Image (cartoon, rainbow, N blue to C red):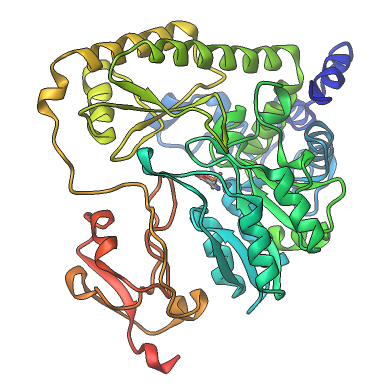
Length: 482
Ligand SMILES: Cc1ncc(COP(=O)(O)O)c(C=O)c1O
């Protein structure tokens, strides 16, 4: 049993505090004559249809920090400071930063503050594009670790500790390890062993746990990297934790060797100077909710619903689901499935058009279903019934093979540094003429935001199935110049 759960239950007898939510409530009840931003002035100057859609209350709550005793984000003061401290305590961190602009902002801040030009950083090849953007800004060089491939599903799998150790042993100049866990489809790596390797070689470990913010709160979910020796962890609370879109947290772990003051400075530069109090309150509220019995029950239900769905799916002939297998585990709430004779994209459109079901994402192979805190058992029943119909009915007859691929599974051929290629003189040329040239742009479609091509990489025929939507590509103009 993870220790966070008894602690949280103990606190249930005390009122769970949500300081930003409280401060916003007070501000709402005590309106002032407003001669400051935002200029729509509590919704009075807003397009009527929009106001009707979103509601008076939401607009009158739309304010930024500095005003009405709501505190400030940079530096963190007042209710915002208190809320960040409560979040740190809840997630088991030494320090937590609230992020607007998602985990993207956290990754950028880590790169800007913890890496610098020429430094070598181990990064998994299937990392999110925000990490690469960060490295382009700082000028640090990724040393790629390619996770195991799960060929049957055309996806990247877990990263092995020995892979990290081999790279660290080979190149003593590597100064940080930055991994993503879990993968988009929920495959989990052995972070504990990886962190032991990092400690042995005295390099910090940063874990992009964007998809794992609930892990601290339920013993049926994997263990969070914050408890397994990572120095910093990002969580997209908006993805699975119940906060509003674009809100995330960056945690510095209790024993971290990183200097949070430097990270804070980078965050200050990266963040808007007008943070939305509604978004900050939604992070505060999500944390508070996860601490309550209600929130813990919602996670229990999500896990139980995932197990129910998985059991139903096991009974459908021709339908397969990705499960924890030898060498890796999976997060039970992320259900990646495929149906014989249907591409994932085709399955996604059938679900959407014929059943009004929208899934998280689809690749050429399968579709990804998230078992969310807010989904009801009846919805999972409807989903399982619908998939049963699709697997047994005529849909397979209209199977077509797509000549495009969606999950980049490429091993890069690096010809120039990421940053040099990004800032090089570029030219835009026809895709077919780009084979053999060096890419000058990041191509990483969302979801999942994993790169197809990065600046500095050789463009080859293997990239073409992923580039159907592109007529032209940006390439380095005079590579020999660099
Ligand atoms: C692994 C990973 N890291 C970071 C991000 C960026 O997160 P956000 O959308 O919160 O900026 C994503 C988004 O999909 C992601 O999948």
